[in-house]
Length: 437
Image 1 (tube, one colour):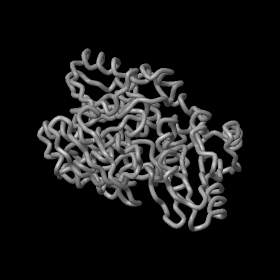
Image 2 (image 1 turned 120 degrees about the vertical axis):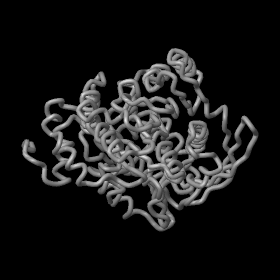
Image 3 (image 1 turned 90 degrees about the horizontal axis):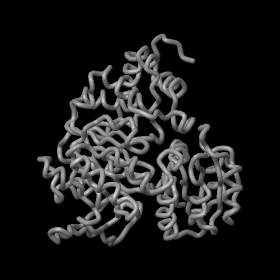
Image 4 (image 1 turned 45 degrees about the vertical axis):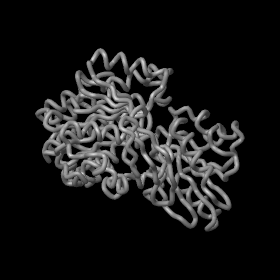
């Protein structure tokens, strides 16, 4: 254990945060608190930085990261100093806290932890609670014009839910974290709807018969106007290459048609685009200079503007290597539909999951005609590769088990020719370790 003395460098600071504080990625739901008291104590300690900047709050089962980065790209290009808080990170902890696409300085992270170390040990927050507080402090300190704040898990009890945003966004609802959020879509939607605030407009990305009443009732109670992205925008895909997707988008209200080129390559981005455009239009009504016409170009450069990674990301083209952080049945269904369209002589898949996912349902979506390399990330929550191998075999998916992501990828590389393709998916942590390689 690190002593109460000063932490002298960035790596020691990360060791302290990872090992001293309860962290969901390591121990699962035991790291979660059933109220916002710790976050409120930290915010009070920091003089409530969450009240010192405007924000957009995002919840949802899938698409939060893509939406958050795309909206940040649009606001940055419009000249606004934009904070971005997302989780989890893939390679570097500082990916969680960015300003205009730049990671916070390592020295700032060290200084923050040293300054408040005694109070941290007194309050005993979780890893997520302290990172949320750090983000709020940095955004207030830098006087950002607006911050895009992504929830970690759920919404109602998520540590980010101490902000009062100018706009709330719920991307979609599907099954994930059922042990924490509920066993029905309505129960999960109730947790996500916890970010709806009194009088604050809310965008609903995707409509569903099971969840629509939940959002309607919350909006009535909170007098929050609802905007359904699917009712406002339609998207038609035109074409795709390894760098961009091309769409025609139609504003159903005024019948205007726009051409969009985006470097977000996943098929599932057709849903996110509707949500992004709806949110952008609402921000323009709030006197942000982000008209649809001015915003379209920003969607072509989301990755360089914001550092978005791991969403149908091409790592190599000969052979093809693609990473995607899809980790639940809804996300993986989209990924596998896109994977089916990839042309290759032979296909290979490196995959791994965490223990608390519905792994049997997810792995059943994978194709049987591929070479499989099952592995586990370097976290205690990881499902052992041998267990995944057994679950997969029950669905007729056969492959070898490897003790690490690097072993699995090296095995795949040794078996691949230049005309082959490799997909790495199943978990943020699997993709994160792959990107480190």
